[in-house]
Image (cartoon, rainbow, N blue to C red; front, side, top):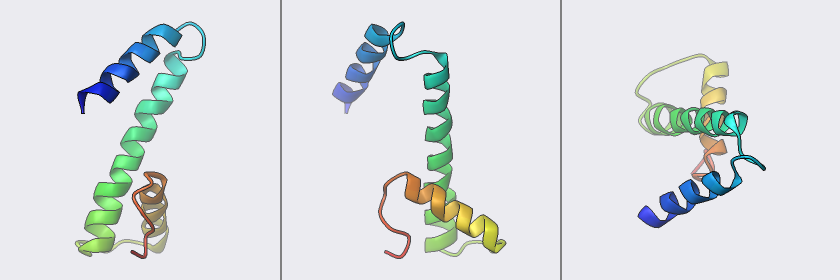
Length: 76
């Protein structure tokens, strides 16, 4: 679990001026949060446990965000 994190930190440090900058790090952080919400709220609470009801648009958005995290299809 530690080796991928160390590799990520080293690669960002080496590529900071060439391919990784604040914009890329912001996109990484933003997409991490968005797909995390898609998994926890969308897949787990909304679609699996049906813990709350919401509009069709929000349900579809949560399903899409969960799918973006590559955790498997919505129907499974």
